[in-house]
Length: 164
Figure (cartoon, rainbow, N blue to C red):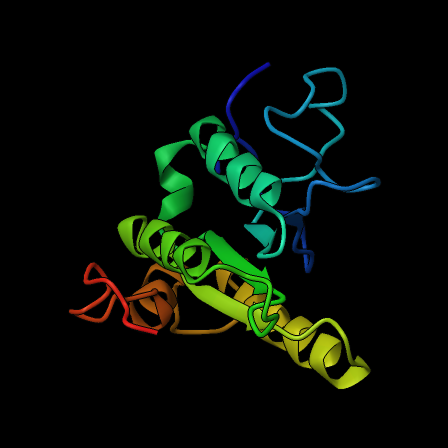
């Protein structure tokens, strides 16, 4: 098992690849990825960690998987997408932990509404925009520049307790 390296393979012509880590079936359940089919695997232009805030295991799995990415991925080729942020069953501390993680890695943090078709469409469009930039399909824009514009930041009072 090896770490993913963003510059180990040449890009494909008019093609971009995104690795979605949702920790369910048919997607990357966990890192590291198996070595068996490494030669046939395309270059991965963007790694997306989808974190379901109603599941503590989802956050823990995403956090544990970060060590299998080469540091070059954190130069605009990683983003976090959070679902179920509006759920009343989500503890505020979990959302704060995800925000801290994204801010500490200088990665974009996207929020997705997965309960409606419009919410899913909006999330897919935002991811496609980031993927186009990360794959180099947008002239005069780099993923590092986009990452600086869209990275997660923490408000100054995030470490203070809330008085709800």
